[in-house]
Image (tube, rainbow, N blue to C red; front, side, top):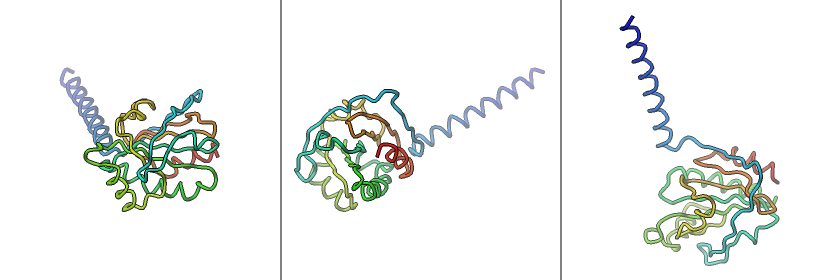
Length: 180
């Protein structure tokens, strides 16, 4: 009887260990993703910065459009995987009032704006790219602790959806279509 309890206990332990290992692997590879919906939309924090081309960039200039705002970094593999998805979304829905904006949280000493502009050009990024060198904007949006983290902002400038982790185009597209 005692042996069965120990064996049963070990099986559970092994099961939990396997589960914990699987979660750790998925989290480390960032192959998991979370979509969070706000029950009551909140005003999106405003910001005014310059993009990598030196042009002014603010959330106000996109009022009346749906905005997909992404916090990312050049060294982040899942972030780089999302680039073609964001390019495609910008291309397909840009004329239907979608704006895609990406704010890099790269260290500005390692990735200054001119280098980020080169990265954007090399990777054929077709949407607005800027830096959040002090991480202030990211903090205003709740810290963006995991990257990539994206926010969907409606035409009235209110936060609607938060995407944490790497997402497929279809995940973004479903939520974008609902707001367009």
